[in-house]
Image 1 (tube, rainbow, N blue to C red):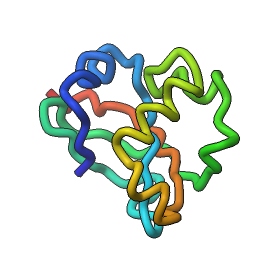
Image 2: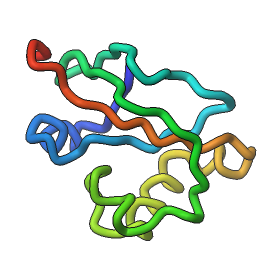
Image 3: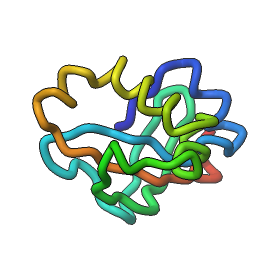
Length: 102
């Protein structure tokens, strides 16, 4: 299951938010698996890749629903500040909402 703040759900429904950046100790999801977003339904995980938070570009931020990499990093620091400081790994999870999700 992937949990999102309510403010992101409309963008996911519209297909504007198709990825999420997560901080985990290790990879928690794999490409090809199905997961669930409460309020959305089932999603298909297209890709999961380890990335470096500092190397995110504005282009990387767009499918996450942010105009700039700086805005995305600011949100991630708010959500995951303690995990960033603890050295958790950063993963990009690319997904699509399944047609029978709703």
